[in-house]
Image 1 (cartoon, helix red, strand yellow):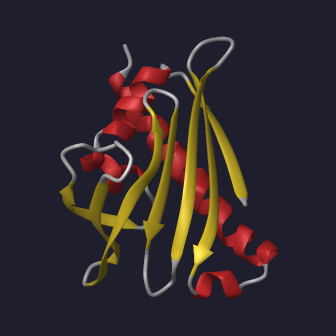
Image 2: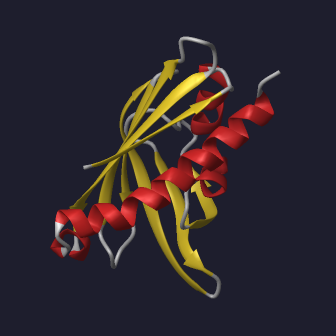
Length: 146
C-alpha cells in the first residue's frame, strides 16, 4: 500500500467540501480528465462517479464508487481504470494541531494487470502521482477557506 500525507492550512470542512463535490474529481485526481455524471447521493456508500481517464483524444470511460464514508473525516473509494485495473483509495482528514488539516491518502492496486508489477515498482510509480493529487486537493480546499 502507498501512503502519502499533506498538511494544508485549509480547515477539515473545506477539504471535505472538495471531496463531497464529485464534479471536482478531475481537478484534483491526477489522470482523471473529465466528469460524465455524478450520483446525486455522492459521497454516500455505493454512489458512483462516471469519469474519463487519460489525455484527449485517448480517453477511457470508467467509474469510481464509494465503499465507505464518514462525512467530514473519511472516504474509501474503489476506482476503475481498465485496462490497467482497479485501486482502493482511502482518504483520511484530521485536524492539524496548529490549525488546518492533515490529509492522508492510502492507495493499493486491487485488480488487473497493475498487480503484476512488484510492489516496490508499483509503489514507486504511484507515490509521486498521489503526492500531486494531494497537492491539488489542498490547493482547491485552500481557495475555499477564509
